[in-house]
Length: 452
Image 1 (cartoon, rainbow, N blue to C red):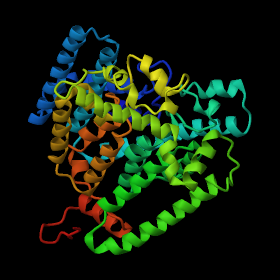
Image 2: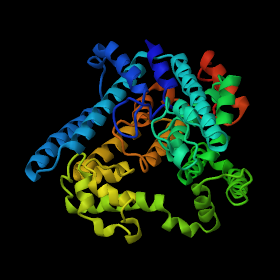
Image 3: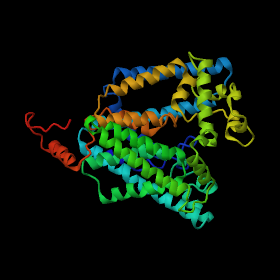
Image 4: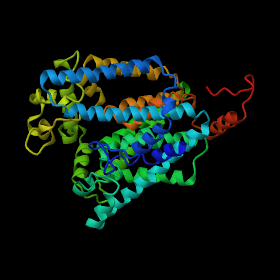
């Protein structure tokens, strides 16, 4: 039955697939994950759950009930609550399925195959991205657009001339590179299990992402590099790694300058001039529309928490806090046709920030949930790879607030496995090979090589 999870892993990149539930985030993988769980439903009731898992489940269930009563008391619409519940149910299904997978697979090979299929799935994303490039810089035909829309619902490639592959928007590329593609590559590389095809996928995908023209994605790349470097660096390597980081930063800045200031690729997009504007003067980010929108949502989220610090506005009810703080929206952003203006009419509003969503909608219960998750993840006691993934996941939640976020549940479940918790990133090929040999042919405790 692992085949179902391998198919789901292959389909991870299709997170905006037509004819799926929800708004922008519609993962096709959920179908196969749900089938896998249904076929293993008996296992769900035999798995041993940790006390913190039960505690978190109780808080979330209580929050849903309290939110429903709040809706009745204050005459709120149930639209946002229903959307939150449907996403949360999907999230529970995803988490339980991955937890069952971890419970039933004790051998490394099952995990290695899963990560292989994760990388292979991005070949589909590359195919869609190449079609979008042809549409933008070649033939902008309705027929080609129709083919692309077989894989993805939203269409920034048409209006904004931005490549967004099979994802709902360009800024979400970092959620895939930082939480799926790069982590899978690191594992397979350290295990010496990368095929030429898988290497080709990774090294083809990254250059194509330049044409996403996403400031947030480029920032995500920096975040990944910094977290990876610090998580895998030993004290004696600090100076050499520091010099390497400076040189890498210089190369990255030069590349961005060539692409977005000199425009060596002759990019034709409004977002090109926007990024060039920010690169030439970083202070311009304060007046950038995208930054202003997300920053405003978060500011109002905190203000909404201060309105109702105990129980919040209720699950899915951020929009009620939003309309109570319209005075905090910049004047130039609150105009007809602008997102922040149109958002005041929405009954199910996204914040792009899981932390402020939990604060504004659940109040103190949201804080308890966050703290419980932090304690829960720290209890896994993983090595440098687990710590790296925990940090990357924490950063990702600053820009995504869906309760059906597959990557979040994937890593919370997988960090409980022995495969992930005991995995340590080894930077040199020699040590990597030695670790693989040690796993296949365990030595006595006296003869084991110390890699710490």
